[in-house]
Amino acid sequence: MTEHLSIDELLEVRDGEGSPRARAHAASCGRCAGEIRRLEETASMLRSLAPLAPERDQWPEIRGELETERRGWMPRAVVGTVLALAASVILVVLLPGGNPGEAPEGRDLAQRSPAAPITDAEIEQLVRESQRLEGLLRRTGSEPRVTDGWQVQTVADLQDRIALIDAQLAEENAGRVSPAKRARLWQMRVGLMNELVRARAARAQYVEF
Amino acid sequence: MGVTIAALAISKDQALISRARAGDTAALENVYRAFEGPVYNLARRLCRSREDAEDVVQETFMEVLRSIHGFRGEGPLAAWVKKVAASKALMKLRKHRREQHDQPLEESERGAAPDPATLGGRPAHGVHHRVDLEAALSRLSDTSRAVVWLHDVEGYTHEEIAVMMGRTISFSKSQLARAHIRLRRYLRSSEQS
Image (cartoon, rainbow over all chains, first blue to last red; front, side, top):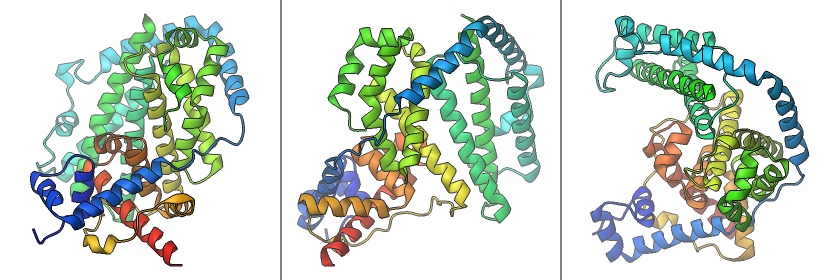
């Protein structure tokens, strides 16, 4: 009872989480209960800050850009469908798992448990697999433009996460990435690249219909 | 993105969403008008400058309105727009961090676990405290500010924030703790000065 809750525990209890021990302590300790109340009040104050309003109307620019895209779209609708169809055929043929006889070892490594150590040679395999997937995406050309909104979001999310990993890998040259972290980052990159290839294939197939 | 009444109404207006999906310009503008305020506010709270926030607004609506024909209503429109806006704003922050060669934020940057007594200070109330809170918020690091805003104001869970930021749940929790410690410290020092 003498040991008060840490800030992490206080926030967890505030958010209706926290361990039974932390909740029990908060229920019986006036000091920690007071801290939780203050954390709630800060959140409440943040929520009550006046909304920051846009200083200018951006609709004319957005409408103009959409209209420009739309003008470019219509005559190319058929071309786009053919390209998307071609892309999906290429992806189905080359998709990881599409041809089990050619399953690269890098893909297996990407699925290995993070707890299992990875050798330098295996990291190089992951790098090569990542490069292979990059090449696959390049060969399928630009993304189809007529797509499902949620798929667009999925692809954007995957691209964001890959960009984040790349930013962390870029720290490698500065000596800020340990070998274990480097291995984990390449594992994650190959995993995400696989997902991206599949998501792009799904988008291309969606456009076909 | 505090969801406004207009945004809620649009989210439930299936006829309007259908027209927007069909590319009706007036309907697309209605969607923009309903969400421009909340999207700008979210972007402005996460980004450092008005210009960056406007870029986020532009990018968000280009993506939303370009893809709305594929929106099938699996979730509320407001949630989708908010997610796109948050992703774009976080992308903008990451871009700046790369450009400025910021120190990477390590997973080990856990929020300290101070004695609650060191957090002391009166709860914030009234107009003066709101001004102070705005100032304190602006003094947080980009990451801490984004996490505290997304969690405490927008209602995202640590799991969702971790996915959006490409980090771990414990990273999100530690950034939230860090944000609260610093907010409290800044507010207390402004009270004393």
